[in-house]
Length: 443
Image (cartoon, rainbow, N blue to C red):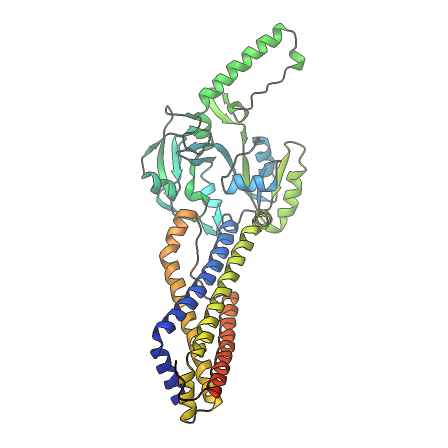
């Protein structure tokens, strides 16, 4: 057996160029297959891990995915708000442990602004219960202070004490509809990277968000007064309805102080997670605002189901990679066997039987596959070690350096089996060719 192994090694070294190219082909197939699988799993984890330990997300009655997208991923905006009475109603329920309201709609240099309370940084969890941490500074305490995500700080070069000017509305160019330059905010905290939409967000207090709309509130009130006067002149008081759903729909001034009257929604945590369904029913059937309470986990599953076409596309790419790798191995070994007839004839001439030739060629195939799998795994893990921080920083997709999954092991086993089969075919082809050729055959 040692002699056969020595012959196989020498044969591979004699054909080292073809051997190296075959190993590279297999290693690239393995690296791409495992890498695509890791990317698919990481994308799913990025969606499902964006929020954790929040039992219900409550907002206006629109749609499950719409509420999930703007509340968690800060994509889009609510069409209308929920009143503070709804927030207070939820807080009074005996099953509720905590409630954190939030408001959306403003922006800063292309990043969304979230109005909320400091409790968000204590209650919000991600990736199986990891807490939000501050890289530097602390949560806002005054209404003119702000907390920014890690990506906001790195892209814009902001640090503690920096003054930022928010814009009314959130547009793609980052300028918004109107900048509130008269009400700048001071950065008091920068969040540590989380790989979630928190990294790309700016957080201020609810009252702070209201204050930058004080001027708009005054303009809206003046318009309402003018409308009321016109309606009074026409003696149509009973039919008058205000249709100014702007800043005054969420804030009002009481005794010179800004008061929040409505929010975009709120996160809710139950004392017992088994009570979440009961709370969901209570909120969805409340006689006040038309509320929609969703379970984040179920909403995430629905969202991923709607995005399953992308997962299918990645799976198709994986199978194409597998097929190309197996085909490359087959072509390399089977065609090469046709050019090794003189080698087989010499081996037969010195007494090598069919079993010896078969073991040598099959062993070469298994060696090539094992070498390709090992090199591919090293290439994949090395690539992930280099690219993972960039992917998490750029796309908020954290790829964990986990061990091989069951799919990966199945693929490696399939490659070994195919390698053995290709080795069998190669040995049969080479031996049959040698049976029909003589030692004087010229090539």
